[in-house]
Image (cartoon, rainbow, N blue to C red; front, side, top):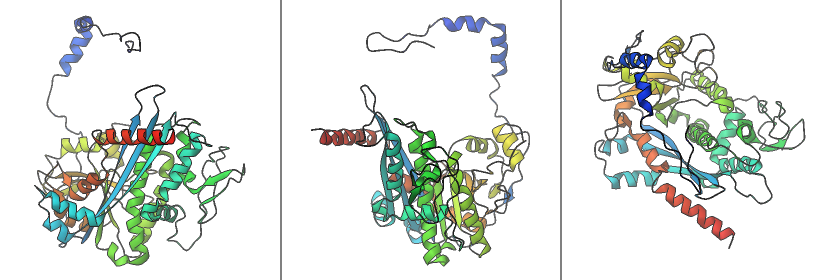
Length: 437
C-alpha cells in the first residue's frame, strides 16, 4: 500500500509500469483468458415461478416509509464527526394515486399530496471528538436515542410503538423486557418491568433506559461511535414508523388494516443485536392473521445480492409470476455458501424474499411477511393476493422498477450529499458558534 499524503509531504504514487511484470506471468495470462467470456452466468438450479393471483380490487390506502442519513466530518483536526438522520412516512389513497401521472408527475400535485399526508422525524448523533457537558459520549448517545424515540413533533408515537412491540402489549399477558446486556456492567440479564421507561440494572444498580434493550451501546466506545450507529438507528426507526400506523389502526380501526398496504424501502429484517424486535413483530403478525386480519406489509430491495440475482433470472421468468426461494436455493444460488446451518433469516427476517415479475419492465425483489415463526420461508405469505392486486396502482415510471410510495417517502426523507450535506454542515457550525461566542 502506498503512503498517503500528509501536511508536509505528498503521498506515494503507484508505479505506472509495475503492472507489466504482472502481465508477463503465465499464471496471470491463463487466468485472464478464462475471464473473457462475457455471457451472463445461469443459475445451476431454477426456481418454481407461480402465476400471480391478484385481488380484483386494490387496497384503498398505501403507506410508504424511507429514511436517509448524512455523516458530517470537520475538515480540520481532530476531525469531529456528527451524523444527521431523517425518516419519513407518507400516506396515499387510491384517488390520489389515480390522479398522479406515473411518467411525469406534476410537482405541484406531489407538493399538495405531501403537505397533507406526510410526517417526518429528524435527529442528530455525536460520533467522534464532540464535547457533551457533564456526559461521556457513550451515555450521550444512549440518551439521544431515548429522547429521539420520544420526539414530541410526532407526539411520542414512535416511543409508544417501540414499547408496544418490546412488551408485546397487544397480548393480555404483561411481560417484562427480554434480557439484554447492561450498558454499565455488561451483565447479560438486565431487564425492566412491564411498560417501564427507565429503571435500574438488577446486577449493578445503575440506570437503564428502555431503549438500551436494542443494544446500541454494544458497538460504542466511551468517547466515540461508528457511523453504523446512525444507519442502524435509521433502519429501526423506519420499522417503528411503519408499525406506528399498524398499531394505530389495530387499536382504533382494525378494519382499515384489511384495506391498507404498508411499503418500506429495504428488506424486512433487523440485524445483529437489534433483532430482538423480530420475534415480537412475527408474533404480532401471526396473531393478527389468527384473528382474520392479514396485515399487508412489503419491503422493496433495490440493490444487493437478491436484486443482482433477479437480473440473471428475471428475463426468462414468465410475465405475471412470482417465486419464493427457499433456504437451499438462497444459500446455493444467491449467497454461494454451504446449505448447512439454520434456515436463512431465522433470527433476523420478518419477511420472506419474493421475486416478482409483473412484465418485462417491472421486476421486483419484495419482502413479504408470512407470520410463521417456525418456518421463515413458508410460502404462505401474508396478503399476497391483495398485495399483487395493489402493485399495478403504485408503479412509478420515473425510476427503474419504481414504486411511488417509496419514491415519495424518499423525496421527504432524502439528505443528499449535495446540497443537504453542505447545509447541515453550516447548521452544525452555526450551532457550535452560538454555544461558544
